[in-house]
Image 1 (cartoon, helix red, strand yellow):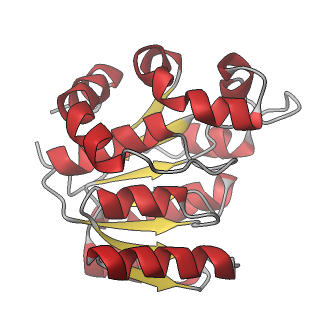
Image 2 (cartoon, helix red, strand yellow):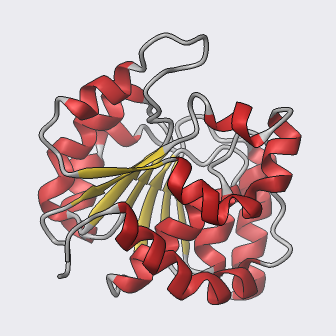
Image 3 (cartoon, helix red, strand yellow):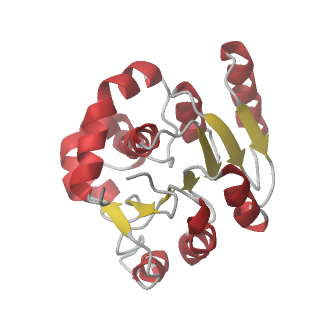
Length: 220
């Protein structure tokens, strides 16, 4: 099946009920990946019959908590971990028997090896920009799909987003979760934009669009 915006919307519709039930009550932390974007990532992973995920960039742990609650074995990299976040996630994992492996290391050093060993969906919210695109290019042959955050056409301030430019030039097959996706699922993000910006339109103007990239292990 082709990777298209329509396909991502259909898959997200299919799993919306399960996602909402499993993640109910999860606190959004400002600056994190949006709830609607996590809906798409988790829905696509379920649809691709994946049970494990790798994420790079944990920060306050919103995405990590979502991934665990959705039942995925989660390998989470963070180069500069927040101890309070690590403690909270570790406690949550123990209390609920979630499978969580937190690695406090530079993901760029291990990305190719991790992709080859785990061959599962990869969620990248750090490093950013061109570096994230280069990591994905090196790993994509071992992945069903990857997702890179902050891939709008322009970065904050209105300058061209160098990461998006790199993605456009990469030769990778990708779809951007932009306005069409947000139109249907943006209501999930009301708490997010209220904490970061004055409106969702302002929030999505620059860095919050996520790219979904098709990998060589994609299951048609």
